[in-house]
Image 1 (cartoon, rainbow, N blue to C red):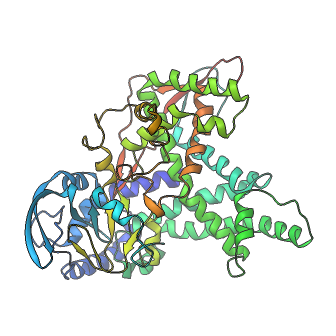
Image 2 (image 1 turned 60 degrees about the horizontal axis):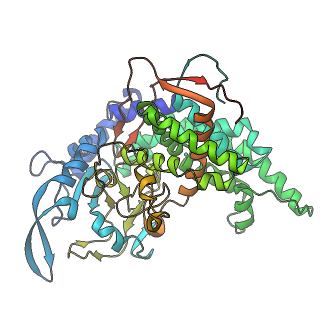
Image 3 (image 1 turned 30 degrees about the vertical axis):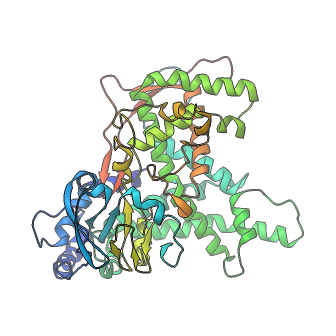
Length: 498
């Protein structure tokens, strides 16, 4: 958890990182950036947002993005401008809003093109050749202060490992500890290295303390999991037909000879934890904050769960599938507090760029022309302003008001009952991506969060500390985080049964 706090501290303070490991490479990086950012970047037909004056070096725009991209994305989404589009060799002046077209933003590691949701349907299922794709509570009778993010991280890790590894391997404490350390160190290292041009990152990385912690946790995590893989292989070779039914076993069964090495298997399992653990943790934390901010939702959510459990007698898939009110609350919480303020369409070619794979990334591989005539050359990074789209009153009535049952009410229409779910995507709900490359783990995340949050609210009362309100979300680059220092108070509920 100290690692996670460190990630946020480094991200929010942006370039003000510990000079012990940034002073010398920082000087080199500054010189490189100044030279690099005066090189022609292309995309002149797409308006640029975030520059303070014409011909401003993109390094300075990147710094503003790093300190928080939310105002820049919202500016581009709402700002009216004259956009010049080259259609059939004719220059047409189109008075439009960027949210109905495209605009560019500058990150420290390059430029990205933000597309309107009107283009999502034409982009979402393009072939790979054109548009490519490469995260124990206490028993207490009186109010106790807790850090809910730490609790959520522990619960998500334990539930995920139960599914990924199965019993008894999910109780491997060394693996659980090192996989979490790996995820935190990975994210921290990525946020720091993003301040540097790709060509300098291999040189800077050894000066970053979290880089060495990352390497250490990688070795320890592999050491903790490899014996499990080898044990299963030996049992399989000995003719044991009692295979386990969990994600690790599925990976082992589906692996080709080249993919089946124990080192590779352990590393892939780490990447699964990296891609699921912290994102689900943050989503669950946001839900707890929103519940405490809107305590009137506790009763309807508990009544729904109580009714389903009385009918089904236990937690099962039917219970999870019919938790429509909880599902709606999850989706509304995500709409207002997403993990990222954009949905990315880009696959970054640099191996270090994969450090930023918090959501799905794609990039244009073959020249592409959109329906409005704008030409996107190969190498263009694409994304959609998912946060701004989700909060646009045109797409969502009363968009800035929290309505925990918003999507539950929409599903009362028989024609809409299978839409508007937490794991459902469309061009106005892009936080899980959309189309053929939408997040494949979103259904697991939905069930996992319903299980965890269902148990939490049924077994515990929770609230903010007296005099406190919902913590403000933190924004670094395009990512949003729940405040990791905020504390809630919880108390065990006295129930006849659960």
